Image (cartoon, rainbow, N blue to C red):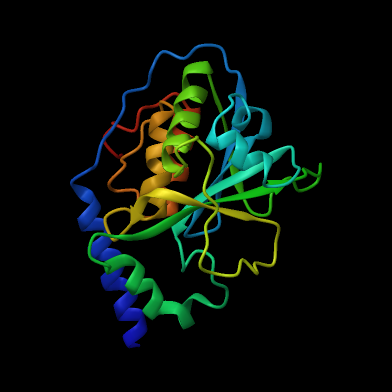
Length: 231
């Protein structure tokens, strides 16, 4: 009972903490689509499926991280608290660690996760995804936002995350992020910023729930801005 109340309280606080940064972007004039991406939603967390060639377009820390992360036509890109995101086990058993991640003063260290995907015709991705296309400006915006997330050395190389054994039950690599995870900047807030950089109208601060991001993509696909008054 008390665990459920704690989770509800955390969700409310996170929503309020992020409200100040709420933003919308009017639907831009779109150029010719150059790539299709997928927003994957497992019910509480989102990943972005990006074609390998998009991530490898330039010689920088992002392309180097991808090159060191295995072979795949696509990569699932996600972001989260350095410890909580990499640990395994039922979420209900890790509530204290989740609270630590949310309420560490100044935020807690974060990581970028890259998962290579070798697509299959019947089930290309591990969970449900919503497809959307971006023009060249949108692709450049998304890629630049992903690059900004990564920490890098003075020579421009990505920094592999350390401190925990990455014994995840799937192929993945984790890379240090220069951003901090906190109650005001959770994984879905970060994903909203990535989508926003690509030209998609999304309320960044209010994007606590993964469904908010899926809704934004569906509006984008319909040519709407998200500014319409609900009927």
